[in-house]
Length: 286
Ligand code: SF4
Image 1 (cartoon, rainbow, N blue to C red):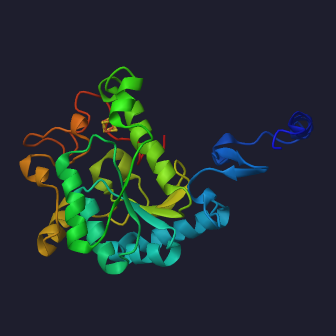
Image 2: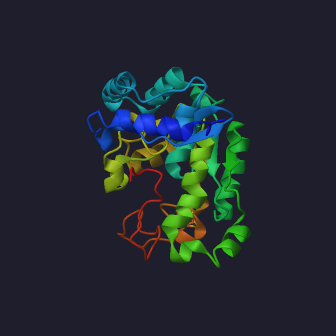
Image 3: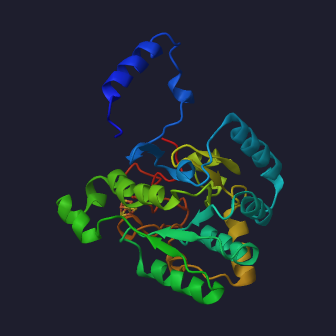
């Protein structure tokens, strides 16, 4: 049993620990440990993979070298690197935005068997879910819908109403972040479609780096692309996109937290309008 003698062991460890210098908290990786039988099993991302991938100094140095080398590479070259280095434990998350659609288009040519998933909060626009069907028809790729344990109805009943109205951070945490953690368990790396010029938070994104929040390698092939680059590719190859973009919605998330933007407004101004919130938390480290 995991707990057998745990108190005695803890006392021994405590006295031994008192002889050691105090560790610096910032260099300790945040691990969630769950018990399975007698073994302690890391519950997150690449640490739960078989074989596990751990953020050793060696790995972090490798990622840093790769990121530097790929700074001037095309998104296709970055995706090829990701597939060669991490498949079959390489995955992609998409909200079916224009950036995600370009990556899906590239992956369909480079590595169509890459598992792609969408965080289906239960609050997505019908147009977004319809786009999933169009991806299936165009590329033969079935984007997997990953959902929270509770339905929207159960979640709202549990909290006495829509949480997005009172605490959108909590709602995003429960219906996106927790779901991504679960979806990424056992993977080594994930691709995101963020661009550095979208926001201050995203400006700091590496092309390749260790994602401390999800305990995975994070790859951002479009980090150096602009909105114009994305739409040029969409128009050139007639890549399917969400029709709401033609109705004044440059950035689309869940329907309760997305509005159309006016002329001259920032492309993300329509997200969580009325709240200080600008990100769902998937791409921030805090
Ligand atoms: Fe909830 Fe809005 Fe976040 Fe969607 S975007 S998970 S509805 S708070």
